[in-house]
Length: 542
Picture 1 (cartoon, helix red, strand yellow):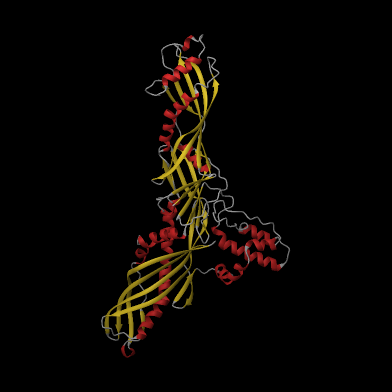
Picture 2: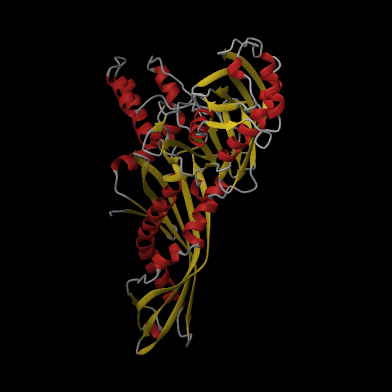
């Protein structure tokens, strides 16, 4: 990997040689002076300003892709000055706009992550888990040669290597439209052999280092992104040198400082690049995983577009592919939704209504239930049988007898969840068939009812899963058919309502108790969460 070096005060800036990147920095002032929207307006373009569906700050989106902007510039006839302006805009969008998700993406989930959470995640992955220390172990520095010992005798320091990384700390800043700026401050403990004239002894060096790098995501494809470390800047602070004899002059301090300033950045920045790419693979796995949903199927979470940044949050759009056992996918579409602000939260995760509904369809796959209407199964069995028999015409001899009635409950179609402000309801259509069997085994349908249920949903988070608990809100019945001429079912409604509450709702809650597994976004634990229900959106705040 090639770098260019720019000396600063006790520091060297290292970055990949890239004429476009260099031009960007030379033109930084120009880029800040005019927004893309103003430039498009000056060009006479009818620019569209769209709004991110899940950007809770409602920031305006960039005006199209780089190819569209280049085409607009090429086709404009307002002169060379305007063309140059548009080309500059092309460069801005190409470099900074890569983190903006596609305007066509309407994913099932969106999340906003605070700078504090991003810092905690990176600090845990890079420092607390010892990843940086592990890749710095064995770091060997070039020999240091110079004049500076006693009586200006020749001085050489050889075998200088890293012994320990002391007290590493990290800070993170989100750069709008660019990515993440990561700063690591640490003390490096070095050891080697020092030869001053003819006297050889061990030398210990402790140097404070401040490493800053811009981390940018590019090249999104199939849920994966490439991470690029740009503009790694390594600044050396205080240096302490220790010799057992103490026979070291101030000039040697200067020699060591100059040599470390020249060599350490070129050794440390590639290590930062390696560590960041390892962490990228680890963290990408948290938003790209297939999670089983009991035995019913799976949910495959993955990135739907490039991560994007503002000064206040890191944003991620996620796809949630809901798949049944056997491979068939339960489709879901999405409508625009806005996340609430982070405020003092670490993470805001929004689940759109259509995604929750697809997951609900996966969970609620209850086979039809046929049973004999007896008190040991349904507490109101006797009253229900008496009410039905009272409606049966006297001439129906097959309906009479001491045999109990049979009942079949069938879910018709899929459940539908509706998210309104501070309210979630699940709608179900159930077919209730009450029948008797003739002596020849054929079925005599006494009454076939259609029940439209509206169930109140209580939402909670347990073990990283979204759990819904249902209770009856309202119910309406209609008569579909009757082989014996029953037409008035008003006396049956309260009894059938109790039947569904006792037998069907508990079965549905049992199926829902498995829960909808949620993505483990950047390993941020879902503890001490608040759940809010908005119109078309279920929001989890951590």
